[in-house]
Length: 312
Image 1 (spheres, rainbow, N blue to C red):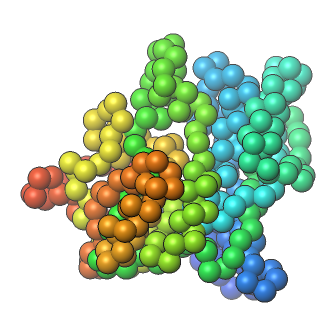
Image 2: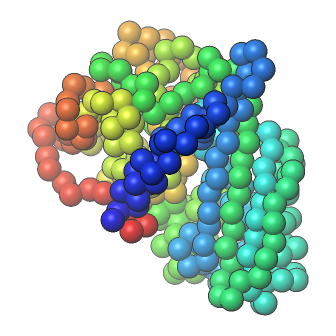
């Protein structure tokens, strides 16, 4: 069973239980209406030593920072601002003192910068390796919430930054090279301000963040929206790497979103005026029951076997 096959199995198994207002599995966060036009969004993410980070290649402060950043990115991808978090830690004996304190310093530095309160969690021992679980909570107007299922045929597809830097950075870390890409891997930037601003834009339809790579993550939007996509290979903003690394490497945490083609030109100008750079248009949403990506290079369809990261 694949990672997403397991998720689908879980979703089906729990479909008959009353969610009492919570939305079903399928987006970066679940959503709950609270008061008037307000909603609460909630997500959780787990980081496991040896899978998501290498303790001998990253400092404890970097791991603490990153563990919160990747969760705040999910909240931003819903179009709302994060407000609070819960943190659970399983620590082996060699990470119970100074390592744990340094981890908390890294986590705290980002929480303080973004105004995110730590409101609970849990700690326990681990027989082998550090395990981290974070729950992030956000709040905003219901009208601002962006979902994967909202893409429309004709929409332009954008990414809010260059891709592949984190994958290159991981290689640099393993090789002992301290580079700009290595910093990008150690301390990813959650695009919170961009996400909140995009949430206010009615011309923005579907949105999510890029954690497993464009080749995988765009397919989640296509499946949820029952459509297909054309992606123009020469327009993919690869950072210091080949296109395959850019679309498959993962852990970029840039926002991926679709915009009505009628509003795209003005939208790009407004985005640049607000953030100082233009989002990268990489393709368009098209009709297609196969819910797949058609890779187009200089006007010709190609058939690369590009897949993003999968745990199973």
